[in-house]
Length: 163
Picture 1 (cartoon, rainbow, N blue to C red):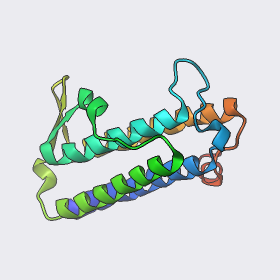
Picture 2 (picture 1 turned 90 degrees about the vertical axis):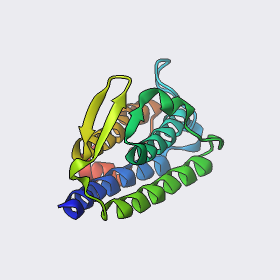
Picture 3 (picture 1 turned 30 degrees about the horizontal axis):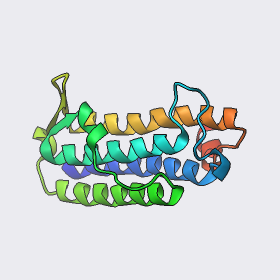
């Protein structure tokens, strides 16, 4: 059961992560720091946010607590260049894969993460769903970035989502 749930999450993560990386690779250099609206951060800021949140998710798998406010203090000291942020995302992916490999050896039926400050407790599947949903929400925002910014979404997005 452990292995099946973890494998399922990993397949979902691999898909959503590949869609993130595909989008990053098609954003024109002149649109890297573009924001389609004053209420939205520019694209490079969106990616910095993903780097920080992913690191918080990974730490939370171990600590069993996810503090929403911690994301703002997560360690990312790199710059906002495409190269630096891409490397940070790839490092996060590698760290998540290592973590999942170690979790395959544990009993995840009792796995719980508490979301703070709301004090909501999630099981393994619920927590993994939250991770996928968060990344996917950003994908929806990026369609707006591409449309307003005048550039195409990746071929994989057209193939998988007709966007």
